[in-house]
Image (cartoon, rainbow, N blue to C red; front, side, top):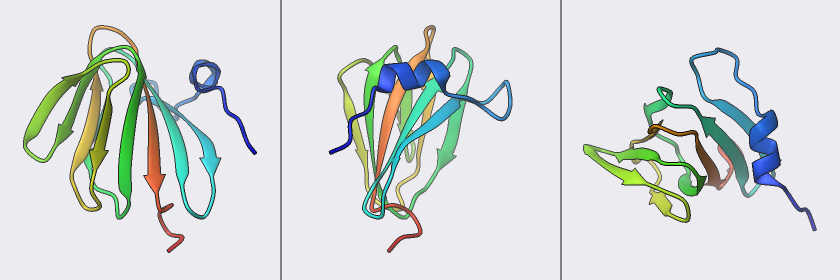
Length: 110
């Protein structure tokens, strides 16, 4: 069994560039990857696709997510699911947005 503390990981997550969201990989196994995003106001994850199913769990904060041509507001406790190949992106609102992304299967493993 493995356990993770996502809010603590969000505090120590890092970014390669100041204008990009901070990320931390919490789990990286052959069947799934868990990636934590800390997206500050004014930051975004540009729309992109994945070969895997992507499940976004909003842990805290508020912002918006995109899926194809659609955009909607999200807040704590909400879960958004994207099918493989579906365009998706995230953006913080006026407060820091913390999202846990579950990517399954892990890209490049199957």
